[in-house]
Image 1 (tube, one colour):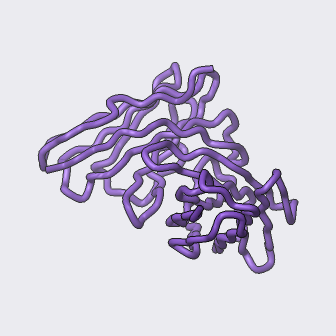
Image 2 (cartoon, chains in turn green, yellow):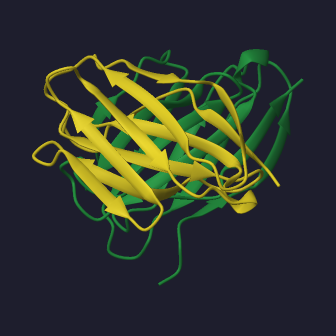
Image 3 (cartoon, chains in turn green, red):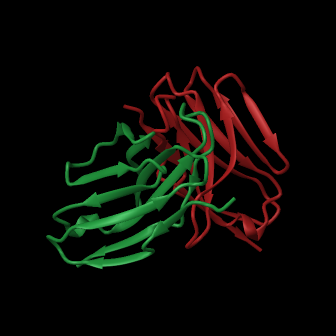
Amino acid sequence: KAGVTQTPRYLIKTRGQQVTLSCSPISGHRSVSWYQQTPGQGLQFLFEYFSETQRNKGNFPGRFSGRQFSNSRSEMNVSTLELGDSALYLCASSLQDRGLDEQYFGPGTRLTVT
Amino acid sequence: GENVEQHPSTLSVQEGDSAVIKCTYSDSASNYFPWYKQELGKRPQLIIDIRSNVGEKKDQRIAVTLNKTAKHFSLHITETQPEDSAVYFCAASPGAGNQFYFGTGTSLTVIP
């Protein structure tokens, strides 16, 4: 099976702009979670989608949003970008939906805000 | 919500020695504890996990222990090799969907 893919791999944006990142999960996985990874902070949970519904949301401002399509592909959007949004954004997919199984991570999208 | 603390943040060991990384969690509802290894420039990959109904799990040179009463779990790597050098993350899941809380990571360096 193909692994989790993310596009684009790298992005450079300017403060105030918005950005959309895409994630395609492993075939058959219906759960997609998003994480922000920054040095020293580890991985911080953004949100999780299952069957097109947002089930959980982390402690991030409303500028961060997402959605999931019927084919389980997911997008996250960040509006009004700030310098502090520069990070590696990882998505992960899981087969099960009960938080008791492995999450398979994508390669990430490296976002740089200037 | 859940809070996961991980120590140490950096760890250097001689090749062949053992390495131990410790994590604590706050939410007694957490029932799944995976460990991920992230090599430089690569995605995190699961190396071992443990569920709350198990106290210890071993896979070759890697083992994880869980103390539910004290709310802490540890990763043990024996006979370390240079290829074990990476950042290791612990995580906890309260089981309310796939919402995982990660520690801040331990950068392990194995010195040949």
